[in-house]
Amino acid sequence: MVYTVSYVVVGGKKKYPSGMMNQHERPVVGEQVKLGENTFEIVEVKRMLPPSDDFEFLHVTVKPVDEEGDP
Amino acid sequence: MNEIRQILKYASLFRGLSDAQLGRVAEIAQSEHYNAKDVIFSQDTLGDKMYIISSGQVEVRVQDNSGQSHSAIYLGQGQVFGEMALLDQGTRSASIIAAQNNTVVYSIPGAAFTILCQQDTGIGYIMMRNIALDLSFKIRHQNFDT
Image: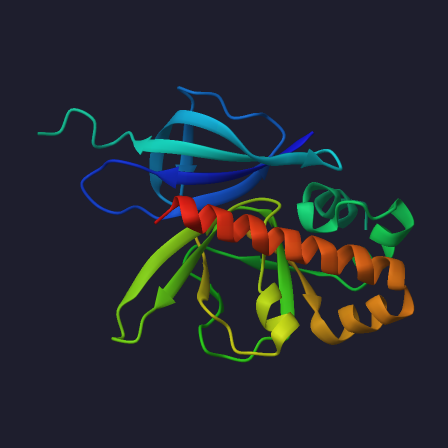
C-alpha cells in the first residue's frame, strides 16, 4: 500500500506551509515529520478518500515541535 | 529505467497503468537533479513539462497580486507538479524551488506526453482520470488548509 498524505499544520505562532507526500508507512499519531526545514508532530490521522489501486489517501493534522515550551 | 518505473508506481498519478504502459511513460521521462534553493520553474512562465518527485522535497511559492510571495506547501516523494500548465496551456501558477539538496525529479515533456496518450488511448484515459483525481485530492487538501 502507498499512502498519499496531506499534512496540514495547526497551532503555532505563525502560519506554516502544509505538505503532501507519498509514503510506504502509514503515519501514526505522535510521530514526527519534516516539512521543509520545520519539524512537526502528528496529532490526528483521518482517511480522506476511499483506497483505490493500492493507494490510500489520508489527511494528517500536525503541530510544530520547535515551538513547544516557548512562552 | 527500473528506477523510474519504481517511482512511477509510487506516484498515485500513474496508478492503474500496466507494467508495459509504465515502461512507455518511463521512456519519455528524464531525471533532473537540484540542490536546495534551486528554482525548477517560475510563476507566470510558460510550462511544457510536468514533474514527479523521486527524492527530496520542493517548495511551492505563490506571489499574490500585491507582489507578496509566500510558501504555500511542500511536496515530497511521489508527488506531481506542473500538470496544470500541461493541461490548460496556461502559465505556471506558482514557483517551484528545491527545498533540499539532492532533490531528484523526473520531468515528462508535454508534447511527448500528448503523443503517447494519442498513440495509446488506454494510457490517455487512465492518465486523464488520474490527473482529475489528483487535482481533486489537492482541492480537498486546500479545503482543510484554509
